[in-house]
Length: 340
Ligand SMILES: CC(C)(COP(=O)(O)OP(=O)(O)OC[C@H]1O[C@@H](n2cnc3c(N)ncnc32)[C@H](O)[C@@H]1OP(=O)(O)O)[C@@H](O)C(=O)NCCC(=O)NCCS
Figure 1 (tube, rainbow, N blue to C red):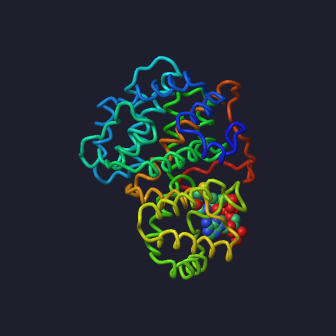
Figure 2 (figure 1 turned 90 degrees about the vertical axis):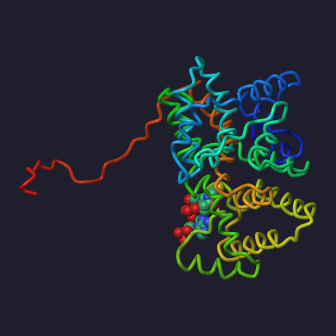
Figure 3 (figure 1 turned 90 degrees about the horizontal axis):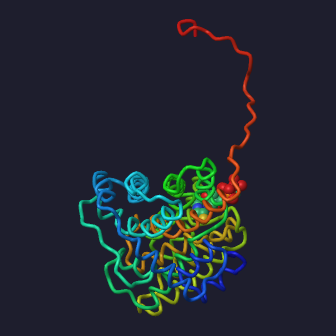
């Protein structure tokens, strides 16, 4: 639920910018408010070429999510925006452009630019794929972005709050959020999930894969969630979208059957449901997006949630500083180096 609206309600009716406004400001926008918000966002998408230069310096081997994190950090030093609000809008607008280019630019290619007059989700999709997506594909991509936008105190948003609580600037907080997002137990899961699905290949191989993974004590990425123990409502919706995409795209439904077979196996063996990353991954795959860009896409949307957390934290700030209880020995005597 975002600010009182069930996620299914928003998925059915709202657009990305509308949902972002809701997350950031607390209520759905009126028409004029939405227009102003959307044009402000698209007007801030131009990235300073020096930020791309920093990205380029990282070279071909840089993982895209690392390149994105470094670019956001560099933006904090390069941009000279005065107010926190301007800095936040800049981050919200530009993380998408940087996410779309964090694979290309370190490889030495020119960045792909956003198009004028296009909505946030469609713009990101065209920068990622450089092809004309169908209306349904664009609609689905926008839903996935809406689902990725916010999820209370997940690891990256909590990280953002910790940094915000020191009163560091939004760039510092977003950079830290990106660092937390990278891991496969959090945002990195969508990339690992797709690699896994490609490795399994056929629905008939799903049972064997689960058997082997569990025997080796390995987690099956894309399953389980700290909050959702029975089902993840976002994953359920994405599963429907995946099926529909395959129907409309006239390709066979093997990918859907594979996802479904693995899901059934994991439920039978471990009572673990698939999470959003598990079903976002095959959707991105069908859209023709390269796997190392999946986590950066997550970041492009979560940047809005992060900034909402930033605001909420500083509005009633108290430094986040957990207590730890030391349980080791005490009153030890110092021994000089050559006596140890
Ligand atoms: C998301 C996640 C970290 C939540 O974990 P959690 O609530 O802390 O649950 P735990 O890691 O304590 O797991 C509880 C039990 O389920 C098992 N488990 C959890 N997720 C599992 C998975 N994906 N595959 C296999 N076993 C899993 C754990 O091994 C543990 O088993 P045990 O009690 O026998 O030791 C965890 O489910 C996970 O690592 N999932 C895979 C990564 C992923 O998809 N992340 C994206 C999250 S949106």
